[in-house]
Image 1 (cartoon, rainbow, N blue to C red):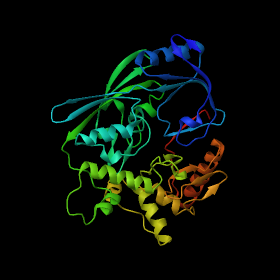
Image 2: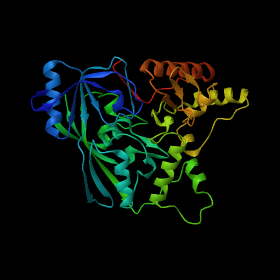
Image 3: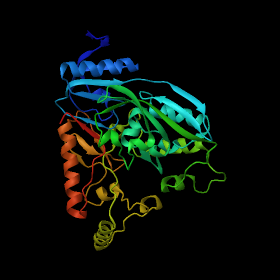
Image 4: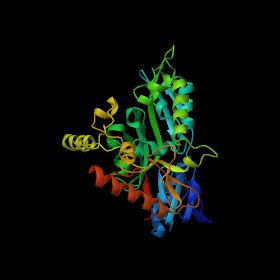
Length: 353
């Protein structure tokens, strides 16, 4: 279907476009490889009064079984522009670029700052939305600016990092200004010849006893191996990788909440994990809370289950519906709240519910 220069598809199944693999169809879908196609898609949606959903790599998404009753805009702008900054290496990257491919490129150029984010599925445009983070690194530490189409003001607009409102797994893009901006390009400032970040216990264990300090490439490969062992790397033939990644955020507690958690844990002869990276913010391991609320890896509800490799991943065991995924989510949230007095907040975006 052609309209205003767009190649529109109708009644497109969305499940195959997500890593979790659930959800119904989009009424319309367009894949935009140029900025003008993004702008045209927005105009089309507005002219038809259609709700608009921006889709990247589909890695952090749960789509309702009824699908999306509007236009899905798949942002597919790619390309990397690399140049030298003042004491840094600058990379301007299209929002549709595969995130892990960009990490691989930066590491090959001996540029540090995102090596611990290796193996995370999805596209570049999604990383500032969630302020993606893992193993001691967050996107907010390296993002210099974001170029976005402003739907309110109907123009392309650059936003400096300070304007993005970054917080733990949060930005203006998924909170106060949700739906306003469509990310087109992200500019990162990385660090030449950087020493790898080894703050997290998994990495410390992996490289324990080594005779030399690991390189950025060593850390990247280690992270991918660690993620694969947890089912957190998209791997052909691994049913545990059919997920939306970590389904719950690590809770950040106030001092009084943290003290209460430690008291409850002591009553059960348990000790709350206390790694330096967690203790600084009173951040608690959501995986620990799940596993100490009676759930085991592999726990199943219908065709949805907890991963056999990681307590934070909810997995589609084949043919699961979004309703089954949400039923398991609700069960976990309820039990954790009953036992520990903490409500786990989901990390994925829920669409069409």
